[in-house]
Image 1 (cartoon, one colour):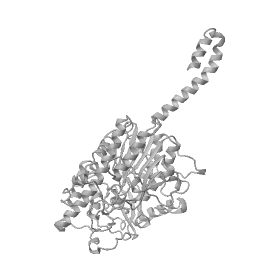
Image 2: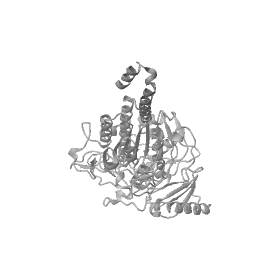
Image 3: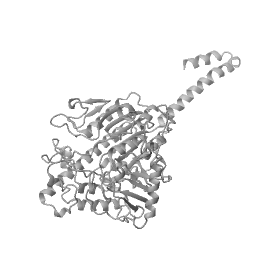
Image 4: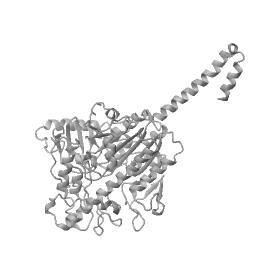
Length: 540
């Protein structure tokens, strides 16, 4: 600025003589300053992005999707944003995370984490929560390498510090394994869901360049087992589930129709037992464990059974409720700092609710920090209302997730869409929202094209081309493949069932006998598509 004042004073003595010199000197400087200002404006306009993931939470386990569980903060995001009636996950923890963070159903060394890419493009990046990948995911995509800040754990571990002060699996801070005494948390006591929010908010608040946009990936461990929750949260739900899973399923089904999250032409599926032949039980307590996978009419249970199962579901509900409370903390931070309107918040679950018996023992009741208890299949079935089956299955109960997006600058409030989408679409969606191109090269090697497509047009109220395919289900034995309204799904490696989802979203009528030619067509297309993947085979 002083330089321009000098020029003005000097050239004012003889403006005609020096005007051309002033022009030659000033114009490039003015252009440079203008360019810098325009670049700064573009950076300012890039949205912050918050990607939140629940764990083993069924399609109907949120209030805004039909649940009796209090989730006011997710309900707010839904009511002020958009909900998807048809959104697919990968039906299993590590497959979902691998696909979502790389944008590839199956990738290899050419895959790059969305965290790493955003980091290179000027975003401040934080991964606070669960990490779990398939073996094909490159180490460069792991949190400690891909994000500026990371506080993670692998797969699953306890929510409280256990009595022996050692976790089943440790916590990792920036690549360093933590002893229990070194765990990061802000409150009076450690609870995992709270601690990850503490870390995320502290890093957001302490970041040096607050003008730069940020990407916060917040994959909570809730409500994956073990069933552990704060006592005050459990008390909010104890007794509410004595009406039983049959009544809960029916009430949720009716509420989903009332909320316009489900067309009433789709019938509530019949209750599902867990029929997965490849997931067994821990040893011991055989008679008791034999009941865990089974659906039994609630009225057939004894009073002591009902009371314990009420507590079991109350703890699960408390875990979901506490997660929602922490999501509210993130929303409040964004509001307080004036960033909510320019922040894209997305929420989903990694798969349907989990029916598998991983109870360590039955000496401690659900919720006890000293215990390690899991959810019964019939409650998981209620969580997946109105669908059949569970996590790992290719049926809608395993693969059909809730999805919410909130972005006041782009998304009109109170919207519900029936356009089908998949979490493989989230990577290109994030790039589209941020105005970033996918790189032609990754780590010096030609990149692997993304397998999904952006859903930003859906956010904006437009129709996007329907993807050619949706694929999910854990391994070949539970694989599902969908084109248009037609879907084939394998169960226990026993062969394909066929459904037309336009007429039968809850998969009540297997059409394989009536349309064997459709099965042949879809199976051949699945195999042809798999042949295009790295290694020529789907690895999920």
